[in-house]
Image (cartoon, rainbow, N blue to C red; front, side, top):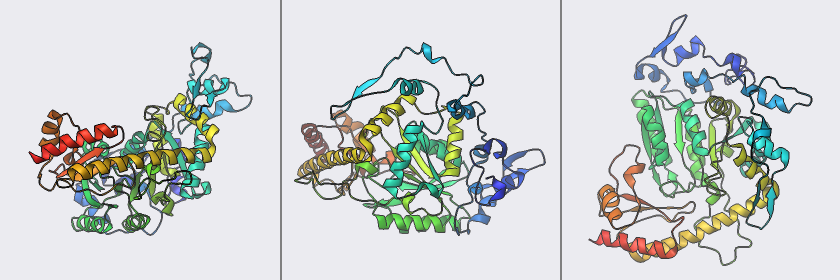
Length: 480
């Protein structure tokens, strides 16, 4: 289906090579001066956004209003288009520039997993893993992840969404931001927010508008105030970025009711939501570590992607926290039209994520099945839950008179507020380092790069003994 046949859709992946160039009408609507032969210099910021500042959504977003012109110009690679055709029976390829696999020195790949089972790739699986592969991901991997998203978020595959595998979820996020955010844009983000996202967005030159977070993440009332401020200034934000589970750095987790409010506001103000959720599988709740773990299950949590009935949420998941960060495997899920654009970007950059990493994961998932996967992530969540309890007990012992914090219900971070410290930057970067304890100052996570009374501590790797020694050293600094 092409952009001309439906007002709210852009070209499908199949037709994108022929229809991806932006129309003069589209570019004019996006604020570019357009002649018959070219499009140049965008108009001033206020002139091209003021007219749209009052617009509210009535349903599915018009993606052409969100996708940047350079992203609209992306075309399908004719070479990449050949890759799926190589699997067709009887096909003889003289078209692709594939290296001859007989020269690859790797002849087998076997590994042992934590249940003692030894798994190995078949000859054909290894051959596929070592060769160029499909941009969205290898078929066994995509099949498992699509099924996982159907189960995890109660979304049927027929609902016009798709999944793409990426080199970590950060790659998917960076390409989504490249597609949706330009120097003229205002982006609404958690305050505090993930430092990696700030590092990604700041060089673009966009205006980062922080929205206050509390123990349940982004505060809906503050989001509405921020949008009203934008409206009064003639500015129309188009993108909302949030980390709803075990937020980095604050450790906050949004309730279903909180997420429903945020999503409703996004619909009313016609925003695309970037739901960055790498800690979803590390959700363990507020309760202490259970006496019996056999029947324990992760607390249920409804994602904004699950709530999305308008096609305005792209979510980002990661295997780094539950399998291995070194495998560099993440995946993005969202409206097919937008995921297709991410795939086009990948075609022109790194071609596809690592085939070997995908093959290892796919073989493990084949062994586990969905029940085995769930058993594993429950085990991971319980592990971090126990570490949370240990760390907080030590913090209460040494920091109760110096710091305030909210008990995290997911993830691996505690966000300390130090009421007697106006700015933690010097304390952490100099004094704490000299005392041989590493933490991160709150300013590193500030969208406005302002002074902060907060400090982020991670409890993911230190032993209980090292946790205690670190907090003893930190408490001495706060007492001095």
